[in-house]
Image (cartoon, helix red, strand yellow):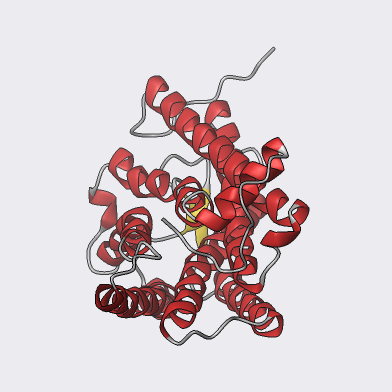
Length: 295
């Protein structure tokens, strides 16, 4: 006999199923696109460059977000969280590591493109590996802090997935939120904005357009901005006055980042797109250059 669990407060049967379906679609689409990105890098020799290694760092982080969304989707279909409090802590930790690594990888890619197009300096393997180790090391560090009491992981309003507990709004949450957000959202956005702005000015002078200089920053703000604003609001007001459904929207929107990033950084990159085509069909379209030019 199948146990019937009560619906989470504030949600109907259809809404819980709809959120679970949205999370599942986001997870499967992101896994497919980023999986192809990683496999193409592994199989196509011409794609294995230091600059593209940063794209792989982003793809791996996005795969982590997709796995996190897959667990949340499964729990949503069950209508309850089946993994206990320890599972909740690990789910929140894993999701935070993937999210922070993805955001900082986007900043690293912008930094690399700035040097490619503005200073004509090519990234070396040692530098690329060092940057990736730094990104993932810092992401693990900031994600571990709630496990040790600075901040806390707890259930989302749907209670079928876990993230940073913003509902308390206590001093520990506020101090952790603003410190973590400064280094892992404000600084990456600043790096991306200044890098792409400098590149855009250079492209206007030369009449070239080697890279879309506006889409990366816009996509990052659209995907992660609402979640950041929700947490910021929770630091000054009682966030529980907002409906549970409204508080779930930023989390669902953030889970679109893996698919969006794959379209921007892999499929939107002429060099990488040719490599993916070669991986999928075996047909080589011209020579895949080391330079990561985009549309």
